[in-house]
Image (tube, rainbow, N blue to C red; front, top):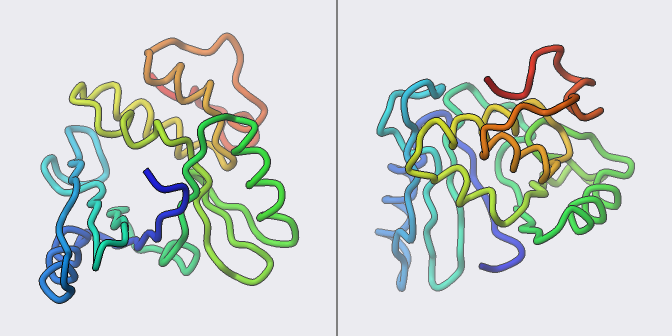
Length: 176
């Protein structure tokens, strides 16, 4: 996986858009599709995310299921291996900019970024829909991503106490 991937957000047509793009460019193909399961913001089977390559370059299309604000599309995704990497990119890129939920930020120049752990894609694509949904719900309740909180959600372990990130945005637990 490359460290940085361009990402385009859609309401509900990510798969159709990716199909169009790969039909237009040479050496282009769909590389992965993760679909929503029960209890998600879109009906089961609708694409959550679509990985694709255009002329050998990786891209990601995602469906939010709600109208996206201007911070959503397009963005650059930084795949991080550790919490320290997330902290590093988050602090430097968000300085003078605006932070958003789920690891999104807009830098001081207005460029949208997603600072996320590389394992997030695997967690969200888990065939156990309950696990994937818990991770998605936890992700939506945080701004800067906390890998330990995502891991607890994936494992189904209730946190002993909410992290300060979650407490700042919700009085609800991160997951059921």
